[in-house]
Image (cartoon, rainbow, N blue to C red; front, side, top):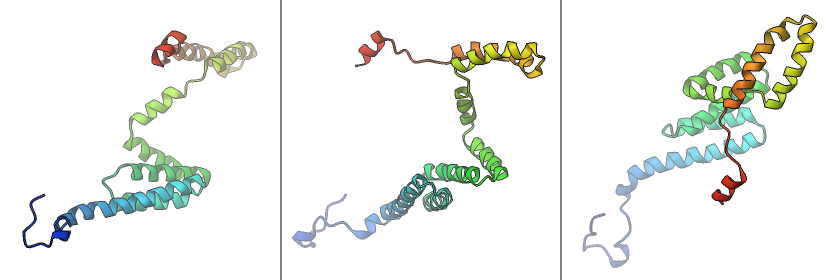
Amino acid sequence: MGRTKATRKPGEAWKPYPCRFRKVNGTYEPAGIALTKAGQAIELNRQRRWKDAAVLMHEAAAGYPEMAQPSTLAGSYDTIDAFYSRDFDLLMTLTEEQMKLQPGLGLSIGMQAFPSTTDLKSLWALAPVRAKRGDLLAIVGIPLIGLLYLLNFEKVRPDISPKRVSVLR
């Protein structure tokens, strides 16, 4: 900030000029309103009022488009509302839009969708019994279960050995 003019009264020397902060206020006020609406939408989401939460979050996103989070959350709330209202055509459309916005999300979800080792052991024990009865799905599933079992070991697992944990403390 520059120096104040000598013509100002002593008590007014550090008061800001309103014209200096118009641009800041022009950014701050819409962001504050958008964040308030986003907070209200999050509270509505906690109350399981997804339709209302989506509407408020869309308003927040439109009020301050520079923030990406309200737009993303609005799409998520729309998706949740479509799911619980059983509008599956809308759900598929919204899911496709979300996947276009976040292309790595599908891969991330897919990697977490692998069955657990316990699930695979159960399937491995059940599949041969069903295959002997002539169940085509079990016959096709046996190699798939084996492949999934091998891939399950390739997932990155954190090292939580006692020696490693004591180093982290």
